[in-house]
Length: 222
Image 1 (cartoon, rainbow, N blue to C red):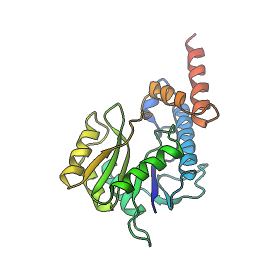
Image 2: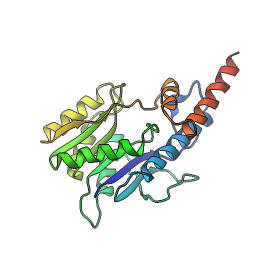
Image 3: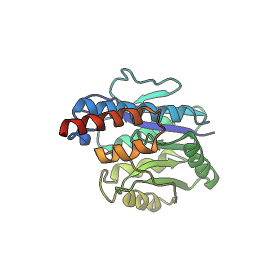
Image 4: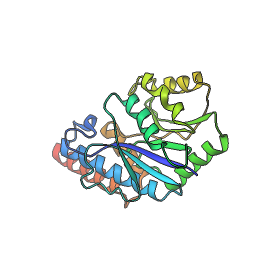
């Protein structure tokens, strides 16, 4: 038995994906965020797991959260919110389920990839964690067997070029063996969005929205 945990903000102009602005407008950035969340949750719903949890910052609005348990994010910096998201998600009647946390920044994920990541976590057994890094030095996925493992996160500086290295070191210092997941590009800046969209299926929300915005931005520069 396993579970997937998605941590995300509700897509709101001026609050979502602000590093996409410029060249995007706040409305365009929020549209990309909404598309990425939607595609991510579709992949999560299609992955065979015991439980799906969304740690949400803000009101759900038009987000389709069907099939997901929703828990509010706590106040504080990202490391603190991540640790509490793990604790809230893993507080279940079934006890601690091996849990893989992802954000909404990698909508190119597939159900098969998520299932493979969880299989690797389960096969490795207690005392291990799995970590999926991003080319910018951050990470897109973290899997643990116990919420206690995530207690290292509030002390890890986030959104830095060495965040993944520091996360790995903190987990190892806590006595865990850290195994690698595939590296994925996450959406921080608009070139990332274009790169990630190209990896998404042509009928995905992210591919359609990013392609439309890229075309609009190109037209505006002509």
